[in-house]
Every structure is written in C-alpha cells, then in structure tokens.
Image 1 (spheres, rainbow, N blue to C red):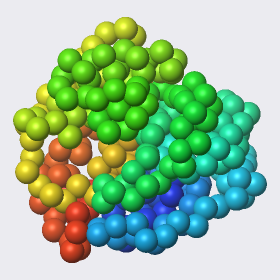
Image 2 (cartoon, one colour):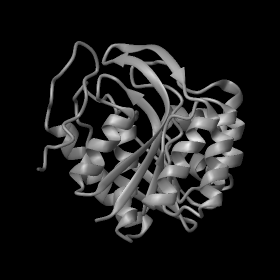
Image 3 (cartoon, rainbow, N blue to C red):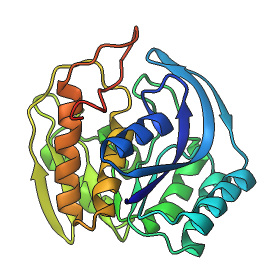
Length: 259
C-alpha cells in the first residue's frame, strides 16, 4: 500500500485541511498520515480561530513519521508562519522526501486569512525549491506574481514567472475564471491546458486541499506530473459534480463519490 503524508492545518468541520486530505488519500486506497501545523475553529461559513502548533512539535511529528513509515509522497497545505515553514523544509531535506506537492494556502474558501504576510517569502524560498509541483489558484498566483490574472493569457504569463521560483512544475487552477474551470500546467518548459466546463456548485469548501492531495496520491504511484494532475482533476470534478449539500455556507465536496 502506498503511503501519503499531509502537512497541513486541521479543519474541525471536516471539509478542508487535514480532514479533506485524509478522506482523499483514503478514497485513493492509500495509507494517510498527517503532521498538523495548526488547529482551526472553522466551518462552512468561515474561520473563527487559529491555534498554531510550535515548530518544534511539528518537527517531532515529522521525525516520528519518517523514522517509521516513510511516505511515498507529501502534500503541504496550511503553513502559517516562517518558523513552521523553515522546520518543514529542514525535515523534508533531512529525510530526502520525494513527490512533494505544495499548495500555497493563503486564504480559505470562505475568505479567512491562513498565511501571515511575512511568510510568503519563506514559502517561496524554502518550500517551492523542494516541490515537485505547486498548485496555486488564481488569487494565490496573483499574490505570488504581483499582477492581475483575468484570462488564459495572464495565467500563462503567471505560470512562466512562477516557474522561475521553483525547480518543479506549476499548476494554476482556473476555478476562478468566469467561463470555465480550465487549469494550466507548466512543466518542463511546456504548457498543458486541462479543460473543464464550469460546474455551478457553490459548495467548494476544501477544493484546493483535495486536489493537491489527489495529485500526491498519483505521484505516489510513480505517474508523471501531467498524468497525476489529469487524474486528480478528474477526481475532484467528480467530487464537485456529486452535489453534496452540507452546512449553511460553502459546503464540502463528496470525497467518497466514487467508492
């Protein structure tokens, strides 16, 4: 059985973060492990509190995992401050972790801020250099590149600029586009468009967490980045189309739709 580690924050309402990651990994019939970076008090209507784990404790979690059950892939989600980012980078480097997916989580689906402003440089300098693929959505990509992204041409310019910040591939997710949900994968200097019609479902809580975990699962199988992203996009499209309706705000996906 393949083993996948998620390094992220907890979502007590179960739709995003660690909980979404574990559901996704389990739906892919793989063994899920987690290093929790923060506890959040949140639900489908918003984020109401964040309690960060200490860098030392996060490091201890990673030591326990890698010394006993080595993961075949790693997904990194919510990492809210510079010290946490540094310890994660140190440990992943120490253990020579492979197949690393970095989801630069800055704001939750409901609008709650999840990354300190001073941590963006650390995210780029420490984690992007380790990534097999980074998976920003359009607002996150705009923050990282410093210009607005309004169409596919802007997405391509942003991907090319982001590719200079990482040795891995860049996936810019197009869910915020007006007329489609086309994603752009920039890998090995080539552009691939993964086209998908817009699914008009307001329940998108945890989509970024879910997609990045699905990519990690496919990388764990030894698939290429392009194959992994294609399979993950197919999975998340099905999870959105399933039309689960839970909660009073932006509800979660049906991670188990295909079981």
